[in-house]
Image (cartoon, rainbow over all chains, first blue to last red; front, side, top):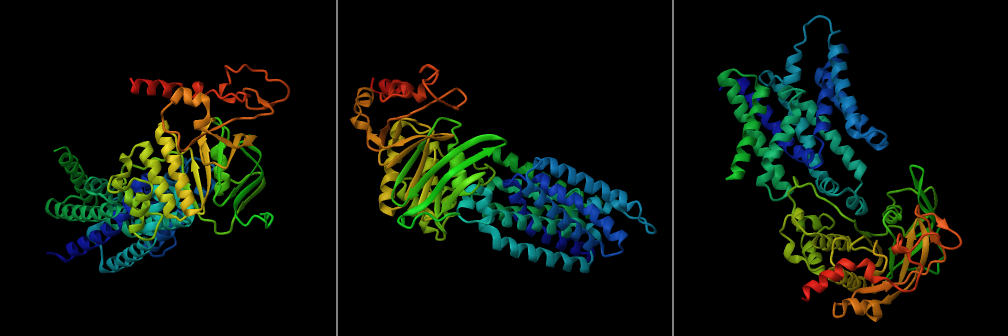
Length: 260
Length: 288
């Protein structure tokens, strides 16, 4: 097997480890649009990285964390409906990013690879960056698992029982921001949410506990990465979209399986 | 926060002259109450009287415009919310749901056993009936080892026998653990038998008093004869004022007829027939 394929698989499988458990919370908390907003804002990060001549990875991480902070703040204000806020931030960050990228001189920017991912161009350097990000997210998520689950089930009960709801919610938001930043190269800004939602939705019907659902979601995500990258290699399809299509096929199969 | 007089070492929480308005509308006006260890306070009032807001203020979820909220430092509150729905995409069993409040796994089963629903432990939480859910919520509140138990409409969607049983259960748990109870209900006449005090709320406190044993009440005996009476009691309103249709206090004689305002009759005679008509029919039907 070629070296670049191993790197691609490794990167995708690492991402699936955290996309699974973060994704089930996205479903439970009905936050799909929230994930979209954070991932769209990553395009702004690409522009910042290029314009400021810093590492694009750093630019993306900065912009997703910044937008996550903005979301946390605006949610505490409760002045506008949250889907209104998300809609405004999501599309203005994406558009602003695309406008700013057009100002970048010199090398022509391959915008498509940022929107849909470029997993086959992953370097060993990228892999270590992803591994660090994944480890941090996994450890923090383990630490806040119980209070996060409690506030997801019922916020007022969690509050009465002493859970610091706003702090735990904010940490969770930051974790998604980190995931988006490290997963950008794999599936791209427009498809990251699919990696969060589709495996989790597929896992639902096999799971009896929240932890089972998170675990199955990881397994299904990994399977989608394997299938997607194989398809991409064999029939020369774009890798990121192939992973998402594989996840969708698995989801549809699970729905058929449910009926019988 | 003002610290109340030290003679009340059993005082768990209190509200003093609370005024709350949301979006310019007065929800609570000059409301004061005290919650003590081992005592049951029932707050009754029609829909929109501000009962749930009262709980929100007490729990600290809503900040009143004026007045003081006192909670004993580090007070452990067990809260049984009104109606909750759990997203069906979350696979979670009753046992796990209750366990979210505790540290040990076995204690969830113990709490479920105490509220009489241990056999539901492995069921998905979304499949419970209203009455079962109340018991499960009660078990979760117990898990938290409460000093004060706050229940928002615990008898809603539960038939009268179930209501009596639930009140009995709460009373016996109270005796066992010695916690204070705040019970909120929209049923203006039937309250928990073991309640120490009843407050009637309609934005302000209309009246307060004690409940009479329901089984002693001739009207109840005539209607329900051999139904269980354990747990339930009758509260007789004793208002010195009236409300108009907007809920504002009217001084002088009542302007409205009792027909349009049956829940608030300024009378010592209780109209059980009016508030429980459908139930009475159902009972007759059952008994052939």
